[in-house]
Length: 307
Image 1 (tube, rainbow, N blue to C red):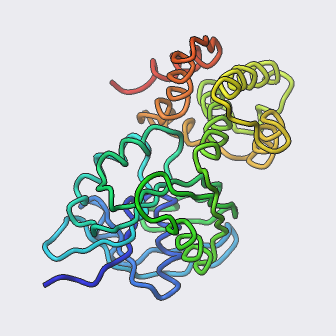
Image 2 (cartoon, rainbow, N blue to C red; image 1 turned 45 degrees about the vertical axis):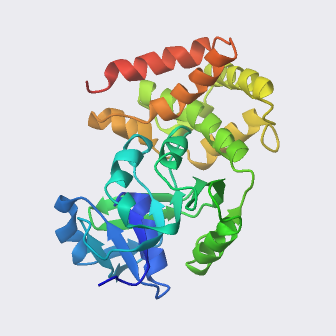
């Protein structure tokens, strides 16, 4: 028997649990798609804390670790790391409706095109730039540490109104969301910020705020100038106020944060460097540009990754 069409979140990291709990609290049926080892803990409910000093609220939702006959997914939010997006989605692709909508929250660029290749022309892929601050207290507990924004737009597919529908859905759930089309320049701007902050903090093992210091200023400036060479050749305008200003603002606003790449390096995990700096270097090579500082950081990060 076919189930009603459902909304799912694929991935049980901090962002996945944040969006899932927020959407579940609106009263809409919400299903978490997770790895088998995660299912038992999450099946007892997910606790959400809105701010580090707030009380926890337990939110219950359906948790599935394996596809089953009759599963019918209409709306899917994909929240895995960029390098895991394709493999994670492959398992569930057959259960997407013919007119399903998939919203990607991945860092960087590259995974979006890979996922688009998995989908049918009648299905719509949306991509987002997310600045929400969230972290896991445990495998079934998420803290919404800093309010941010979800800028999203259609990447490919049939439904021209899909972005507006998702913005409405997320806004009702209490998340700040806005349509940003075309979405690709927005993702390039986010990639540029990440390509400066993430590798620098990971290589030097420092919090984001350290990059505002005098010692790091020449490096930050050099990385920024290399990105602007690529932007100029690709015809991508700088973000409002200029790229250097945008990077400085993010560094100051997230001064106490340890970047996701730093956390991955410290934990001995693979990073998202290929989808951030790697994408930038690939674009530079096609334009016959040499990005010396970005290449140096890329090489250092790759040397330390698990083989």
